[in-house]
Image (cartoon, rainbow, N blue to C red; front, side, top):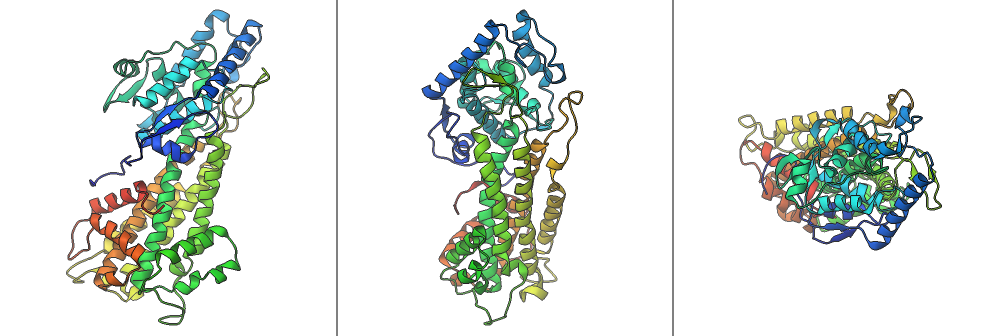
Length: 511
């Protein structure tokens, strides 16, 4: 395992994932995003796609006026478009909306966006042609990754800018990364043996009118948050062993009088992981009570898992939703609505932000208890020669900086709204901003938990307590020490801190 930034790496068993618009889930997305899984649209979904396309053609042949098909967009929706300009309208839409700015989204998020958009189109409510959908599928399978700037979506009217940067590659424009090189969209398709599409009625709108940017970031972040939350529970176990924490506060009968299930799940998991430990104490053996950062782990971690579960429930729905406008119903009606509005995901991402930030907040407090000799009874800052050595003094500074940054990022994005399109679109969700902030908080929290793991490891080393640990915690400690061995003197461990954070984010050893 190499040191460095939090990279998009994980080994996932290769398999095939069906995009039928009904059964996609976050773990299947993970296998496509990070692994070798290919995607395929099953025939049953293609039947729905063809039928939806036929409904669009029939409406046009009947001379009906359809929003975004033979009208302008947003405030321009009352302007009818001549029949000969219908295809050009869709081309113009992609070009006009590809206005994102900022650093590109990571490959993992772009792949998730593409999978989610293809899955939404496969539901058969969007009017896309089969050939256009299949090109998007082939881009996923052949590793063509559009360059998608991370900023520029207000999270309503669909994630227009980021999705336009994906869609424009299908017509041979824009930029894409292919085989490690950023090239034009047309060249990427050519090298992969694919031909660009010529868009027809509604297809540009079908490709970009949805919540797949915020949902893509959200799904990737949620998968990472699960690993971070489990690592937080394990870090707390190791800290309890380092400090001879009191397990009595995790008693199942005690917790049953306040029956929040997530609270009991945390306590049960930690009791199991600590089974067989000779370092854990009971009430009154050494002290009557531990500090809140240890005694209240089930309550605090459990509440963060509640936030996780809420976000997961919302994303489950959104992953298999049609988020277009207009929607082409099975009865032939084409109705304009508001499914593109990201508020359900915006609120979920803001809640996830707070939950993930709290994993880090309480972890930093446990780190302080480990390094502060007045609280721990251990060597000051866990140094082997205090005074001459600083030990892990400034490691706690880094944790403090990260949790403080998280507090700023945790401000809810969803409470903000700025009107767009000449006040036609007068309330927006800012859900994509919230999702990006959630992922940043999750990465920061992984770093904070990595710091706690290092400090707990060092405390156990100084106490020569390795053989007194529970089997489960000892096994995990060995993985931690493969990345960051105990300090026998001051040394720079920045790279090891970052590598351990990456391990927390990417490895499913605790699930």
